[in-house]
Length: 368
Image (cartoon, rainbow, N blue to C red; front, side, top):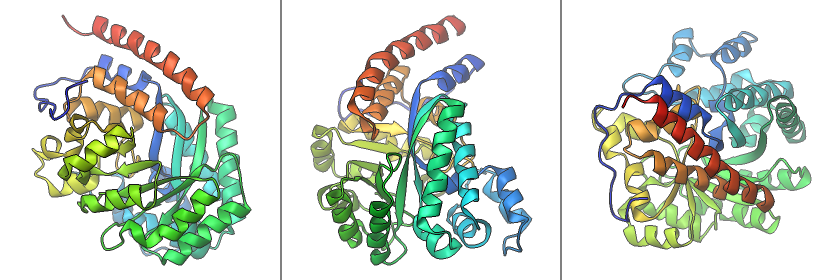
């Protein structure tokens, strides 16, 4: 890996070949940062939307599945899914099964994905026990059919009352499952700092759940990352980009080997930075140089118009990282996954060997 403090050079003139794409697809992967409602297939969205009148036009729905030069935000469609479209637990089974099927096509061997129970329970009206059971059953069905493992991460809606977050943890405690690993927190971070939700995180830790949090997204300050780590005591950080503004804090978290699940298609930076400079200026590029362990993910794959293979491709083609860097990011994903240590040890031993073989195949297929 490059020495701390260095930033990868901007990639210019790189031609991504079919050999590259085969390589990115074949990399053994974990996916640690994906939202279930952001992974809904277009045809499924339209199919579910036919069941009742909804205040969203066909043009608006199509726009959610088109990544333009300045990608649209996805929060409204996520709210619409809960409020108007998801009406029964079987819908959640369908979404989960299809997401895992799509992920498996890109050699994702383990996925940990977010779902917001507050929306499903309070808005859709699906009882928590029924909703979780449907998702867990889909995890088991997908594991049987596609050979991957998965964990559900119920996620706090930070735009809701913090008491709802406490209630969420209680629901999880009352409906324990080996497929439900811990809690997260998402939605807009603006004016909703992590400390508002300290009780839910305290209760989750006491109950033995793992924890993560979206922090430092939407350009929000590095203090939100610090609060998530030092007050909420999260096991890993989702996004966390603004930590680059505090190298001393970054060094502290690097020493702790904290994993940051990053998203190369993060819409905030693609919308707010110049189109020809978003990759060059994206904070992701600076994070490994500060010693931080990062791991690339899709976030909202269908709504961001990206798949797991393309997320890894973007790290190489746009963000300046090398093939060797990708190997380290792959191992970071294993380290950050909420799976048993025996499986981690097996993957740490076998995946690098598999990666090296893929690298040799790639080199042999590229023009001299």
